Structure formats: structure tokens, C-alpha cells
Image (cartoon, rainbow, N blue to C red):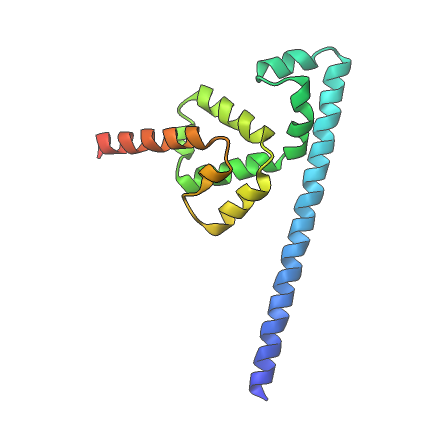
Length: 153
């Protein structure tokens, strides 16, 4: 009888855990949708005030980039931070504002978020070349970090 109770407890914990994860995903999806709606409104206000093209030009975007930008917001930023963290590049990334801006822009417009999420769930530190448009810059940062570490170590 004890084994049946333990099995029921495990099944219950498994279902409870699954329900908790689903609830968290729903909360994140709702919050993300709200943020996308707010971004869309803000960009529309800028367009009505004649400021949108100037703002987009300042960050290296065009009006054609607006929909992909909104679609990926705010998940792109979360995935990007997670990737930098996985590769140990947070510090190296912050050293160069040009690289910083280019990588964020590229990630914001990327349509490979699903593959990125999947890669992050694997725990791997390799394989991002298969999907990431920032792969070359990530490699550059990894090489620069290694050289910096070698020089100080």
C-alpha cells in the first residue's frame, strides 16, 4: 500500500509542477503581450508626432523593422541576456557600445527565438552557430575574453 501512496504523491507532484509551469508561462505570455501592446502604442504616438523615423534611424532600424521588433519584444532581451550568461560574456559584451548596440538590434529582429530557447534549455555552450545571427560576434567576444584572461592570468 505504501508504494501506491508514493506513486500517487509523485504523480500529484508531477501534475502540480506541470500546472505551476503552465501558469507561469501564461503569466509571462500575458505580460509580454501587454509590453508588446505598450510598445506598439508608443511607436504609433512617435509616428503621429513625426518622431518615429528619427528614433528608428538613431538605433539603426527602419519602418520595415517595426513589426519584427514588436513581435520579438520583450522575449528577445531575455533570450539575449540568457545567452550572454550561458557563454559568460556579460562583462566582455558591456565593454564595447558598438558591439552592444549591434548585437541587441540583431537579436531584437531575429526570428529564431524558438531555436534559441531550445538551445538554452539544453545547457550547451556550443551549437548556437546553427541558428544565431550573432554567432560571429559571440565568437569574437569569446576570443577577446579568452585573450584578456590569458593576459591577466
